[in-house]
Length: 210
Image 1: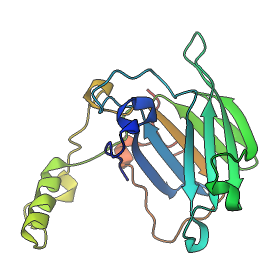
Image 2 (image 1 turned 90 degrees about the horizontal axis):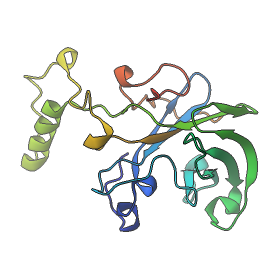
Image 3 (image 1 turned 135 degrees about the vertical axis):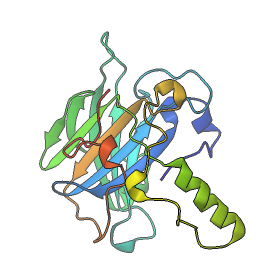
Image 4 (image 1 turned 90 degrees about the vertical axis):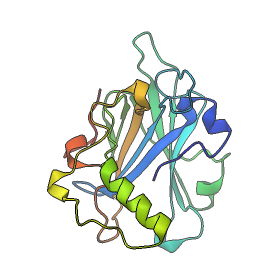
């Protein structure tokens, strides 16, 4: 899922702009990945994560209409080396929907390092861009949508697919920072990794630090 500046607040600073959200099964449990802080808003963005923001993964368990589990990550300001202290909280039940709820502190750590406790792992820091797309295929899909017909893939070969964003840098709207969280939750059958294999690591944190 990608967020495309659909709120005025997100356009003000890259640190509050959610570029992409990925969910897929990991080595054990579920992987939740969020990348933020590109310059797609056209403004200069400070490095790292906003110290007054809360970065949240909201989970609707068992088909619930509202979130019943929220993982909330908060950050302190950067030190002299640019590293930030972080904390991960879990909010469950009604508290998962409440901004004022404190939640349960699960772990503490720092950006650029893996923090782990009780089967949960968290990594946050600057990454190489994880997004993959073959724009030649996108053009075929767009044409099919415009005409209301099935996509014509007769001239496209998966084995020849190329990542049109290879070599993309932060100046080209690549995300500057990412959260990678692994939980003990099971994922629905058939859910597949959304990050292309050549752009992600096969083990935690499943992204390539920059």
